[in-house]
Length: 256
View (spheres, rainbow, N blue to C red):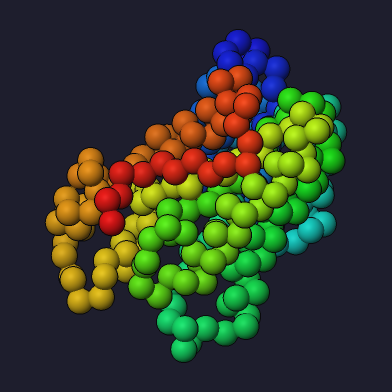
């Protein structure tokens, strides 16, 4: 398949087997890209998605890669080049959530969250950029938690706030090579991660139903679908975003 806005392009997606990552894979595939589905625990989901895409004529490969492990990230990027000859776009969607009070934080939890959400994205950008030429696009994943006060969500928010700073600084480093780097900051999105923690996004003691909370906290009375968020990644990788770099694009209707 070569038709569409991304015909002939090679896209690597970390965390590509589920949630927003899987939606990003689907978006690029529908636009004609060859896709590399990076996954960690979701082997069954990645294989199923790969089979679905291949049935539509999309060239794709699924590669196990724990982004907290540098060697596995290197192998993911090498596999993309071995299979397709190059990397045009990196969409770094792998991430984990965390809720916990300051008093209960452990060094192990801090290390793990930052290893996946922060270091994993930084090193993914590094290894992808090494294999990119002019025109390459790197899109990382931040969160609207960097701009909101969410109870017992400080560790997660800190790991994502680092992404905003990262893309600003790396943009001036990668710009002379013709590579842009940006981030997408989703708000609440209909994924398993949000469903498993839905009640924790409310202020303590509020105890509203999910429907009531959505009606008072979101301008559109609902949360985003993964495909709606995925559209921000394809935008930032496309020609209409050629002059955007070092920026974080929010995708949300949260009003507080």
